[in-house]
Amino acid sequence: MLNARDILETITMIQDEHLDVRTITMGISLLDCCHSDIDVMCRKVYDKITRYAKDLVATGEQIEKEFGIPIINKRISVTPAAMILASCENKDAVKLAKTLEKAAVACGVNFLGGFSALVQKGFGPGDRELIEAIPEALSVTDHICSSVNIGSTKAGINMDAVGLMGKVVRKSAELTADRDCIGPAKLVVFCNAPEDNPFMAGAFHGAGEPDCVINVGVSGPGVVRAALAKAGGCDLTAVADLIKKTAFKITRMGQLVASEASRRLGVPFGIVDLSLAPTPAIGDSVAYILEEMGLECCGCHGTTAALALLNDAVKKGGVMASSHVGGLSGAFIPVTEDAGMIHAARCGALSLNKLEAMTAVCSVGLDMINIPGDTPAEVISAIIADEAAIGMVNSKTTAVRVIPAIGKKVGEELSFGGLLGSGPVMPLSTYSPAKFINRGGRIPAPMQSLKN
Image (cartoon, rainbow, N blue to C red; front, side, top):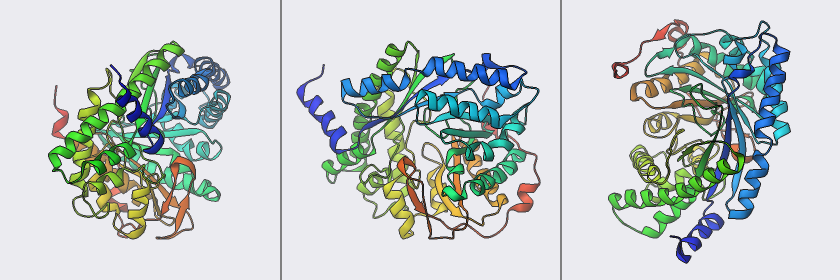
């Protein structure tokens, strides 16, 4: 039963503490759009997306207005495009990307995810064609996001795909160098990618999902930080308990929006993703939560332990607030999208090595990190391999979204605008992993994979 105190508390969270629903994402299966003729397939893809998602943005805006809850993004995710591309005789992946872009514009959404391939165990029909087309596809579109899953706990790591993705990330940056290298900011390389993630750039509609579904991602780092600020000098047990209670309240709002959107659109409700997704706005920061716990600056010793506490407490509180929890669900640490992370990177407190350690205990991985423009493709591949190894061995989702800042050096900045933010170019080790990467093959699955 809601009372006046609950209502006023929620209003404060929204007005003063940056509480919002980060995204309503409609997942759409394109499996029934397969056709041997690329033009016929593209027409079917466009028709289905625009038919299913034509009211998505308007519905989100209605819910915002009626409930007073900010819904920042309305997005679409689709079946990994490589799957439907496999049916074509002429596998023109760029033409498919342009069709997806046209559909995204027609529906008025912020992003469309699913220009994707799942190659953790090897390349199937359409996979290599799509992957090689990613740089051009991201350079000629504004709303399309891409992802490639190169490893899993069950399959191991496809090092041939890892080697290819280093080249793809670098080329994507080169083709968009005139736009602050925006291409790789829309590209994620995964290990253990979830099929129901509503967050970009990694969202796609998995093969095990229904024909159409609504997934919602909530966000409230500012709310958690404000709650901790009011709590004073309590011990870490009390901190964890407070975060759990706050995450419960945040997730209940997401559950409400998801259920309402599902009802109005006549589409099944999928999941609520519990992830604390920060923004460049001051106060809306995961790093500031960690500092509120007692760290002088995010990145100092103790950061990994504090993040582990935060991530676990968010999951424990959120899972009790929704009938279906999924996606990534935890705490995101994208450097350029988090005001506190940006500050920590600029002052030198936060290094790539520390970020890698932090990814072992948080939702995803090395996210939105600017690296020197002259970084070789093999080094990018090695970063991907390291992060995938953490995900594979720990049976968790990890990802890499790094941006080679073409023409820029350590300390210089890239600025993407909006939620993607800005940040400094961070230093990397200058020693070469090229011989290791060029061996190719597969890193075998770990013992943890034998759970049947």
